[in-house]
Structure formats: structure tokens, C-alpha cells
Length: 83
Image 1 (tube, rainbow, N blue to C red):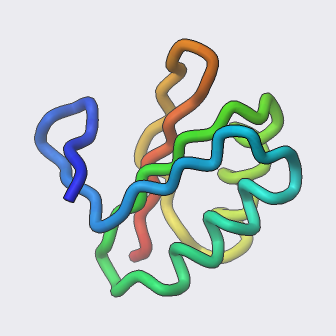
Image 2: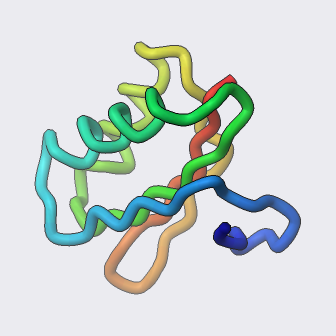
Image 3: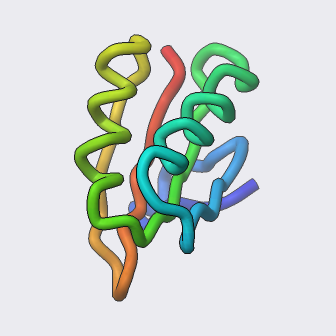
């Protein structure tokens, strides 16, 4: 179990995708979300500059929710939810 930066939300899974480039972060995030039960949250950490655009777009297409996007030093953390 991983604690999110907000401190009040926990993830069933954290997916570290640093080092992967488009389209792999969105594809791996989609695969991970598909495995999770309804209501589960997933934190995705990526350093691909296109992932903060690609992952929310994939979520919109697939029906997942983007709860937050947080810039980090050299990376971005996205918190996703499977409704």
C-alpha cells in the first residue's frame, strides 16, 4: 500500500514508469487499471514529457478518472481511479 502526497488517499498499486517513452506509459497504465477492482486507485510516476497528456487522454477514452497530476523533480505523478 502506498500513501499519496495528499496523505489521505492510499493506492492499491504504484506504477513506476520512469525511463519509458510514449506510448508505453499510457499502455502500461491502462493494463494496470484493467487489473484493479472497481474503486481502486493507481499512482503512476513517469518522466516522459508527453505522459501527462497521453495518460489523461487514455483515461478519458477508457472511462477511468484522473484524480490529480503532481509535478515532481524530473517526473510527474498521476493518481488514477477505476470507477
